[in-house]
Image 1 (tube, rainbow, N blue to C red):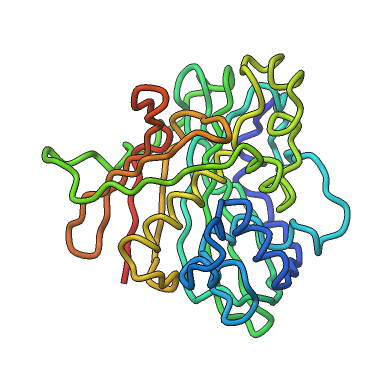
Image 2 (image 1 turned 180 degrees about the vertical axis):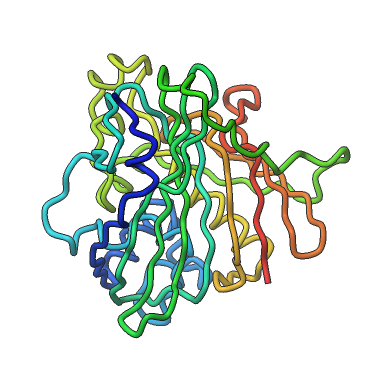
Length: 289
């Protein structure tokens, strides 16, 4: 049985140690397009170790980059889950920050299958990860939603409705983020070595004209745009950030992020203008301090 629901939900969490250095953070930020104007003090804060800031979305790659040693293509190893990798899609991602992420450090990361939702033709597996430093202080919690085609229909709960509905008014702000043609090649050095983001022939076999930008790169690009454009460049103001991945872009294309603000809650929608406004991230929200 591809999904053993009882085994998946009752399994003990797996724990690994993640270590990272300033160079991992620098490379991650470069992979998001930071530092294009290296003379801009605001940009330099992301790409120079003197006074280095850490974007909260670095949590998604902490312990997986150059300091981790050998870089490998991603896989899936979860108790009770035995699914063909060709049938899965990274459908959504959330990140909750409990403390600022240090520019270098280590964490114990605990992973577990938190939910398996039955969507009829597919299952949605929610993989939760919690990180704490050596003193036991919580750093962050993430929840990855994995869409598994053909694995639904097992009689489980459908799960909650998606939040992040767009307000019925014009956006308060539109933030524009240009990507670079080499950006996927840089971003993959932070840990995701999937050939879909580098190998033209592999990308064509997957149905794309050429290699695409990582979904988590778009996740980071939009976060940086909000921090720079609305939060005074202060990444510690991000409390919670959640998105649904709605479409891919090619490196070199632009991401436009529309923002609706209601107090400390932001509703976001990211689109690609080169493709007539095709959605990139939807059902996206951010809580800020």
